[in-house]
Length: 521
Image (cartoon, rainbow, N blue to C red; front, side, top):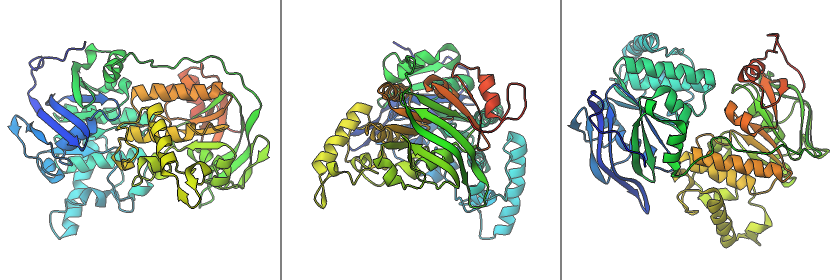
């Protein structure tokens, strides 16, 4: 049994104290009588399974929700936080997993939005521009203030969110899954920023599923399970394995075991595929490869190097500008997504909100999304709600979706449980070819283990899988062959046992001798 640290074990005073915080959403008991102290000037990690109550607790601190019972203290004083405006006045800022930015506005306009100070915008803009320049210099938060936010990388957009909180005077920063969509280099940069903020005396709370990152950047870590705090530990005195077991209440396999693959016939054949954007620039550039039945082919590469567009072209979402795609020898290059699905291709998209779910639909409606024309779900002109509900209930049981309520609006599930709904829907179709983009993004460690097992099981039943992941450990754990992409081209193929250095060089477009690579694999 894990024991939490005594409150007196660190000389720093509390920045935040939760005392008896309790919160329900109908039948869901999200937070259960939580007592938690976060020390001033610390980086504090908050971990737990999807639906454990982490984001709810931090949303109460930021004023998005009101606790049913309990008290929050800031710097030792009771704080009445009834809105995000109250939280900002109390010196609290929050960077959400889904960024709260207006894509069509500039960085400067986003930072000023809601904090203009008066009707005279010109003086406010001048003050903000000067303040952003100083913040950028102090904290390595470099970003062009006149850039349109929608044209920035994910890492740059995250910097804008942090700039917003600092511009508003935040002394306490909450970051919800801050590395979920960042490249390794962007993660390293973020951690430098967090340490610099800590060095300035600010308090940082990091909600994440990535336990290696907890070990890398936090001083303390609290573990939540089923709405309760089950442990608070000094990070240096614990291990990833201990934290994983505390999160799920059992031992967790951090790397799934798998036997050798037994590849069969070629299922997917991509030949000289080219995909261009509206400006005529090649996003996928003359790419060729195959995927056989009974194998997992992983594509490694820094985000934004054509992997997303490659999956979308195979799924029929994007039109190819050259080359061909064949499934079991049949040309599918010109087919639309609905036709491609009927041939046995399933697709777990990288962005579940944009392409995988309709958040205002119920969970059971999302369980059949994309397959709603299947005769199994309809009786004449009407949908068979009994059959749909039964299928959703089975999917929820098989993939441990929480809460187990198929009638609940999908937006009310945690991000990880939303991902489970998508994975359950696509794997449950028993596809002959599964296209997988970032299968475990925002998913807790217990669910990662379960999803990995499902993918290996699908492979062992003779299905073909094409896997794209920003997590190199995930690629190396699951793939039987690894293709590396850089600037839209396949730069090489290697075994998953290859060193991180070798794979990293290919991801950067370099061969083992440091020369540029590119072409077909």
